[in-house]
Length: 311
Ligand SMILES: NC(=O)c1ccc[n+]([C@@H]2O[C@H](COP(=O)([O-])OP(=O)(O)OC[C@H]3O[C@@H](n4cnc5c(N)ncnc54)[C@H](O)[C@@H]3O)[C@@H](O)[C@H]2O)c1
Ligand SMILES: O=C(O)C[C@H](O)C(=O)O
Image 1 (cartoon, rainbow, N blue to C red):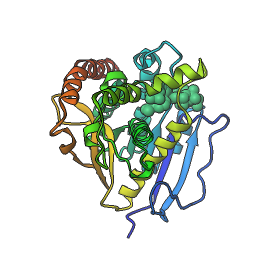
Image 2: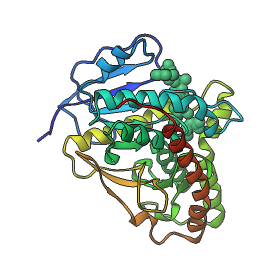
Image 3: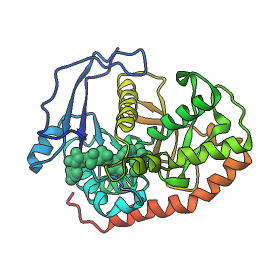
Image 4: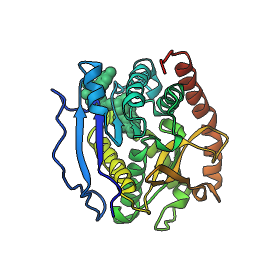
């Protein structure tokens, strides 16, 4: 039986115009056989006119999705978005802390490797941090990895599962091809080419869009998948696994993307097995990504610690 009605709120949608009223209850069916009879609606807001409007929208919400902020232009790294997006995420997470502190928070805004630590620090300052409920959305990396591997190996996309660990920028995105399900054999050249393509797929889109932004449709698909997984978990499904950038003790870094088991209260378990028995290539790549990921995490924490947030 379902636990409780869940409502989702998205701040900073690609839609233009006014904020949308809460929709009528509806069933959601996406990438699974589950229909959410208790899902009570979706609210979305593309621009925020005043704090009270944001506060009203957030009250009673179970899942908050934050894709607000500026996207990259060709030649930019995700870290180049830090100066603008750090403040946006800080302010929105402050509002979440004030109005729906128990909600799952999905951070899409880049640089995810820094915005998630910012969110954590703000929630700590507000005294409402629950590490189990803060998620950096790295689902698009998994979607890409699955797609590229399915194409390369002539597999049905629905059957393919490639865990992607680390973070969400350049070499910090580490697809674990040796853990591909169903088992697939790759030559060294294929591993190198697939890994680099998955790591650079966001940049590929940014360059192709030539100044018109970054991935939007594929991100919407990935966000919908992660929201659906969260709703299934909130609805009591005991078999929900996704990769996400979360507080973690799987490595020596305080945040790390890995497969996690999601339950009613958020992350129920970090799944360590994907990181065991890595290939030599993956082990080297894992060590190589750590300094960059550590620096991005520390940059986010330092930014948030300089802020004064009223409790
Ligand atoms: N995690 C991922 O895999 C992933 C994938 C794609 C995009 N992104 C990131 O998502 C962010 C948004 O990208 P996009 O392509 O949707 O950009 P976009 O410009 O199409 O949309 C951004 C939205 O944010 C809103 N916004 C801006 N400032 C805001 C604020 N202060 N409060 C609330 N809303 C605000 C805008 O009104 C707009 O609706 C970027 O940082 C981008 O890098 C992440
Ligand atoms: O690449 C970007 O800037 C957007 C996003 O992080 C992506 O991976 O597509």
